[in-house]
Amino acid sequence: METPPANSRSERQSMQYGTAFPSTPAFDQSLVGPRARALENAGFDYITLSGHLLSARSGRYEGRPDSQYALPYHDPFILFSYIAALTTRIHMISSIVILPLRETAAVARQAAELASLSNGRFEMGVGLSWQEAEYRAVGQNLHERGARLAEQVEVLRLYWSQPHVTFKGRFHDIDDLGLGILPARPIPIWFGTTFNDASMKRAAALGDGWMPIADPTGSMPQFQTYMTQAGRDPGSMRVMGRLVAGEDGSEAWVAEGKRLQSLGVTHITIDPPLGLDVEKGIERVAAAREILRKAVL
Image (cartoon, rainbow, N blue to C red; front, side, top):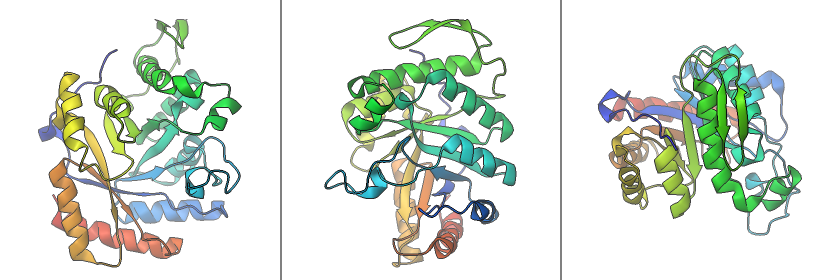
């Protein structure tokens, strides 16, 4: 499989700051535009949006919070298209699209259209789901999901770079077909993963970016080793870390931001603490972003 081109760290921009797009179970379309514009006006570089394709009943999986499987999730291609029309600068990163649940050509088409309509502001985070019922519902095999994901990423890059694609693999058989319209520039593909070896190796070999599920401190050396083994420069990888703008205040935020930067993190996603309502949460993450921007390169 082809790996994406590696850019040296010296070619990168300074630290990028983002936050999850604020949403609530009681979805109010009238608030999407104001919230997206508020985050753009606050200087954020990107927003993320997470979710499953299907939602399960609350309480179905003992020991797992509802946020992992039972919310009214939003489709990133549709919601981001709406947000793209209401903003001009902020990037949009899916965090994540559970790619093996979806048909690859349809994803290629949707992502290319969104990238075009947003003037290149869409970046696609992909990953896997643990929920076997969700895979059965769309006729996919949970136990093939890792191999299918890897092949899908290869096929997506072909669709986005070639007018017509011929490809025969384990999951795809494409006979001289294409999207008709190619994105103006490559769409970055981020890999959202846990810290198991197979997931990290896949992200290290194939990703433009890595968004680990939790603090990457303990796994960063191993991830960088996997990049080297794949023939890639560890300094070329975008890496997303998370920071909670809690009640401990600005000194703690800056210390954590600098720690993440020292690990090799290039994108910091700032979360509000639990318990704040949406509007106060936006104010909190905006304040944290401004403090971090001044203190962290």
